[in-house]
Length: 352
Figure 1 (spheres, one colour):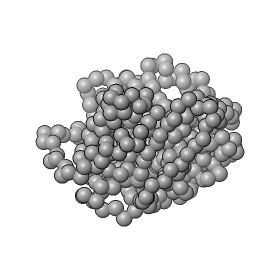
Figure 2 (figure 1 turned 120 degrees about the horizontal axis):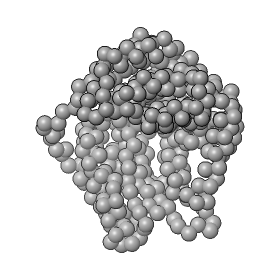
Figure 3 (figure 1 turned 180 degrees about the vertical axis):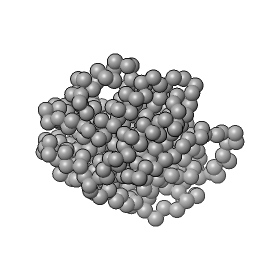
């Protein structure tokens, strides 16, 4: 199979090393108001009155990068626990409060953040602010709910080893690629680390890593910006900062040469491949062109990669590529062509 993959990758590298096209003209982003509260919380308010909906995104810096090696998965457990009761509502009452108005509200974890996202009708904006504030400032952090979430997470990993190996590939791949760097942390943890996480550990993580000084709240939709600012200031203006230090994530070192990690699974009926390397950061100047190149190469079902390996040759059920741009780039990376070359080498390619 490698004889067919290499020409495709070479074509991509050539494409990315060509001069980037000029920025498209006539594309404008909507205006928004940026407000920073005295406690460090940042508000981004974008009025859009096209439809009577309001969307919210509350981002807390930290995420799985702040997990210790003994507690991989604690940030993920905390994020899931934020949905299981807050304020004066238990888990069921909280879910019913969201569902009863046709809204959506969920929390998730990435390598560098915990994010709460939601959508509500404009008439339910007050409820939206109340629920998000409860999740962040007054989470129930119920011990029984944590036990259920922890056991479910462990069982998902166990089942994945038998029935969903493809979902585990990125976990092995990132750990092999990044080693002890925080970007190699398994976001969802492992069977061993999850089993060792206690309720006290989750509460301590909340106290140490969650606070106003790490919060960005973005609201977009059918609302009045001045009124929304007043509501958010009243809800979050007096919140405390995080007690601990934010993890200082340094730039990861570039990888040279080729390394292969083999995960033996006796009895498996399929073989999965994950190919990747380190590349560029979130603020890469040519990110729009890079996203376009990835879409054409392997980011969709009709991409060059899937066309060559599935449709034409029948070598695999599916193949795709994706780009993940964290906050830190390759160590010592410059801009311009050097950055593009680095990016050509950094992409995750999954085959099954």
